[in-house]
Image (tube, rainbow, N blue to C red; front, side, top):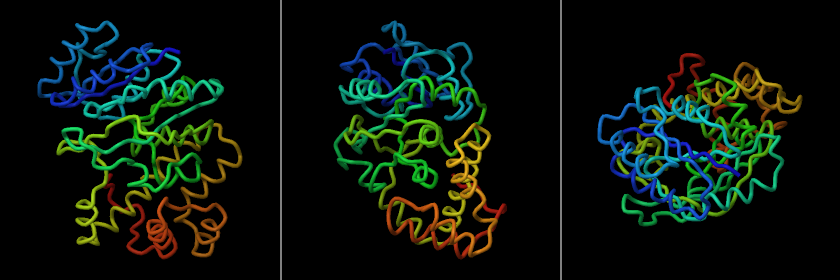
Length: 318
């Protein structure tokens, strides 16, 4: 099966060559690497040119027109650029373990390619020098991995760097021009769980590097403590995330959903418009929740009490 690897770069000169080397050393070799630069001002563009010159499987798709469009539009453009059976998303600063693609291709072959499919794995969290900080990012941050729509609506556990999708899911997203999303990996997880299969492999296939320049890094204790000492900011972030996840899920209502999934999504995106008893009834009926008990308690309390809720006035913080 042909695999297109999609890599969006932005000022990634420090780790890019190392990540590409980890791709070149994969045990599965039937791949092409498509790289799009999102307006780098460091030496990233020159590194990409050198990498492409040395390996015919590496393609710099926007060498003649480098511009900044943002990470979601950048990956959307990469996905539309070339057709394959399967597509992997790659970050510029991580490091793939050698069996990553082989493991995911083997899993993909168990499913019909006519239905949208997303396969993702666990990750090891590492420092700048690839020393392991946490053996499992899923268990450290989310307690467990999501495979159902009802789970993925309120909390994402799909990390783009370990996500592989099939052509059916690629067509579903590239057929849209929706870019007002929280992140492309979360939206693809929603699409897969709503229209096909969202599959998790409980094995790390990537070293997820933590450093000062991460676009979106793993949550750390320091980040959490910083939020708790500023409760007004914390509640604003909670409401911003709830609203943004509702806005993102609302995009699916324009697609041909099953009646059951349409009902689940409609009731989620409109829950704050309902009176208290109706909000309580929806939470009980559909089981909207977070992955950890504490976060579920906060989420449920906010939905029911509307504490610090400002409706459309809430500021988008994500």
